[in-house]
Each structure stands twice: as structure tokens, then as C-alpha cells.
Image (tube, rainbow, N blue to C red; front, side, top):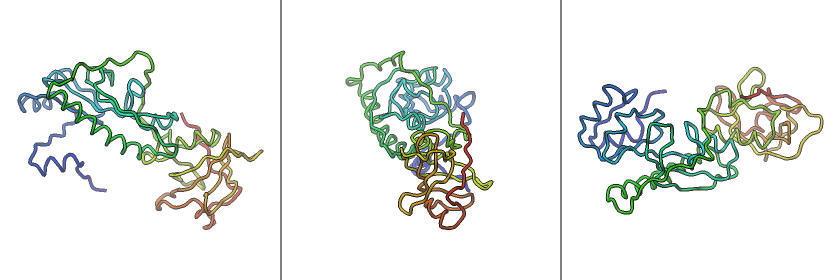
Length: 278
């Protein structure tokens, strides 16, 4: 529970580079940037705030941003989670020239990658981080040498979607929905904030599941139908059923869901709370 410096800060300090961590880039923070001297380019990755006009105008080559989607789809704060949640078959990274709008700038380069059928947002994040780093170096090299840089391409007006910030309430599982949608929700919110349900007045985090098209006629959504040492715990949904494979009780470690049945805490016929999401 102690604050730890990011890997970027650790590297910078190890190489005796100055590190500034202002709450925003307005006022005195902008003055700090001016003191650095002539700036060729600024790079922004997962910053979370819009850059003020005076900062955007500082670098000779402007400010470039690495964004984890194929723009203009999923502009905004949570493009990776929203892509998984929507069931997108593919996503990617874009390096764009920043302007005043939210992720509206023209794009220098993009790389596309498929989203795995069982891939979590955390796993996809790590793949996109590596892909984005390589693409960023390529774009900066082109800009620096002025070779074949050309001009960034304006984003199309069609296909704009917004990846709004993830709220904790969204991570509450609604078993009245389909098993396919619930599977996407679990994968989209792994590792944060973590999908969950409630049972016996306790929050139960759900980390890994498998959707099943088979349904149990007459079973109320959220009802525990069966358990299997290999597949986990099968729960009824509004459409199909969901095998809970890895779960976590409050204050405990992650464990196979079937272990809760062996312990007697969860039994066939029990019903997990089904909380509607926004």
C-alpha cells in the first residue's frame, strides 16, 4: 500500500533526468516546460487531461499522442475496455498529432491487431503498449529526419465513438443478460475494476469465465446450476449460462470457483445477486 514510482520515472531518475509531476499543465507547469528550452516534440501517452493551447504550441513539431484504438473509434478514456466490452474483432494503436479536441487530431500512423476470443483488457493493454511503443519510435524518427513524413491524415467524420471512463457500477454483473455479454464484461474489467456479484452479503469478484449457449429452462438468472472440477461453477443467465472459473471472496485470494462449492460456501440452487448495470 505504498506509492511506487512508475517505470518511466525510475528510468529517468536513474539517468539523472529531471522529473516533474504537476497536477495540470497550466500556469507554473507550462512555465517549467518553457524553461527547458527549445522543444522539438512532446509525447503524450495515457495522460488523461487535455493539453492547454499554450502547451500544444510550444514544440517545433507539435505534440503527438499514442492512443489505444483505431481512430475515430473509441476516442476517450477507456478505449481498450470499451473495445472488449463491445465485442470488437480487432483494435489497434494510433499515433496522432494533438489538437484542442479530445482525440480528434490527424493520424500519423496506425497498427491493427485482432482481439483474442478469451483475451482480457489487461492482456490486450500489454500487447498494445508494445505495439504503440514501436510505432511511436517509427513516427518520431520520420519527423526528426523529415524523410517521408508527409502530413498526418485527418480522421474520417464517420464512425466516431467515445470510450467513456469506466464506472465501478458497470462492473456489477447482471445475470439477466446473455452469457456472451457477461463474458465480455468480465474480460473488459480484468484487471480493473474487476467484475463482481454479491452472495451472502459479500462482494464476489469474478476474474475468469466461459460462456455456454446451453440454458436451463425455468431457472432464474443468477442461480447456481452445477459445478465441475474442470469447468467451474455454472450459473444461469437470461440467455445461456456462464461457467465461473476463477473468483475471489472479499479479503481472500483468487481461487477456482469450484473450490467454493467444495467448501460448502456455494451450493447448487443458490442464487447470486443480479445487479442491473447502466
